[in-house]
Image 1 (spheres, one colour):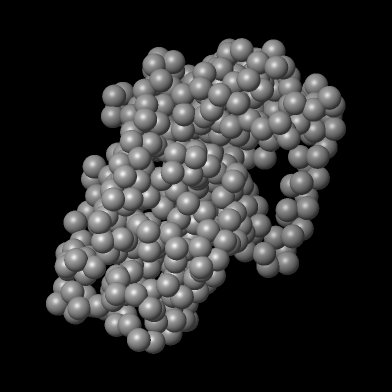
Image 2 (cartoon, one colour; image 1 turned 135 degrees about the vertical axis):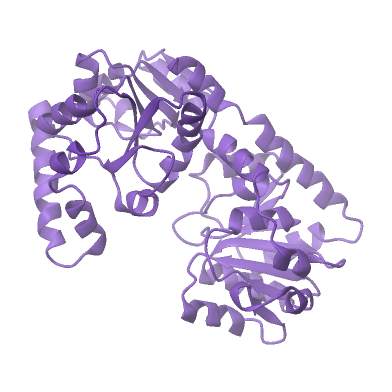
Amino acid sequence: MRYVYNFVIWLYWQVAKLLALFGNEKIRLFVEGRKNWEQNLASKVEQGARYIWFHVASLGEFEQGRPVMERIKAEHPDVKILLTFFSPSGYEIRKNYAGADVICYLPMDTMSNARKLVDMFKPEVAVFVKYEYWINYLTELNQRNIPVYMISAIFLPTQAFFKWWGGWYRGVLKCFKHLFVQDAQSVDLLKSIGVTNVTACGDTRFDRVLAISKTAKQLPVVEAFKHGEKPMLIAGSSWPKDEEILAAYFNGKSARLIIAPHEIHESHVKEIISRFPQKKCVRYTQTNEVEAASADVLIIDCIGLLSSIYQYGEFGYIGGGFGVGIHNILEAAVYGMPVAFGPNYKKFREAVEMEKANAAFHIEDADQLALLLDSMFAADGERLAKTSEIARDFVAANCGATDAILAALKI
């Protein structure tokens, strides 16, 4: 079976190189970033240094690994972090991340590449985040008695590990010294196939959003916009369908709305403004405190502020639920903000759990959102206060995964 796996990896690489020739930018980055990797990394290796290797698929998994990496660097400044990405969408955004000493694409999972990379860095420990079961790398690490951990993992019955034909793939799990998973279902699934070196300790993203909230930026323009008694909703990472539904509600209400769209190009910002013909809309980069104070809609037309903006809201709307899936709801919930989102949310454990706790709400259309917001923004404020407390407690109760993981790593 390993010969079949190696052939598939080789074929995948050949197809990627071919597709890169036809102008697909993401695939081009995928291929170009892996060319001459050995020569490129050789100059970055510090001989004799202690390396801990973190591997992530993309940006979301990076955010899950980040709390652990940063705690290691804070508590063990002599330790070097090797951070590898599989996807360009993660690497290209975080290739200058200051918390790691060496950042690169993961070379394709061949036996030769695995041997060369491990020889080069000689990691004391390897940490894979959430998933990514690269068999040659895991085998190489295992053969050298280098402990490998999986963190913030989720296992589902649909995965190959739990199918009758998945026996060979189940063997990959033996390469991990310990698996830290997000929920009890994952523990039960793993135990059903004889994997017992597993601990349910939650998702490290809870620790990450809590840390972010403690260093949130003060934003005078947003503070000026918020003043007064009007209720305010913050829509984060919105898409056109989300904005259409929000406009249907806010155009007829005396309330304030902050929209931080997922795409901030000029035509999209203008499209958002056109949805509110009777409202005073201002753009964050083109306004001031005086003007913002009298506005109805504040559009965040820059990046990097959303996690700090959430601190000013009473209720959040998280975009993406009418598309491929919702964006990060925890950045809002950490401030005690209940949230709403579209119907595509069930693959996100935190959204499902928050909905069960009555601090998150999925909506199918504009009418459902209107009913929800009218209830939340009622004059007595009773429901909003109750759900806010639930949201804050939900995040607090799920923190602590980083501590459990670091205790096991024993750096």
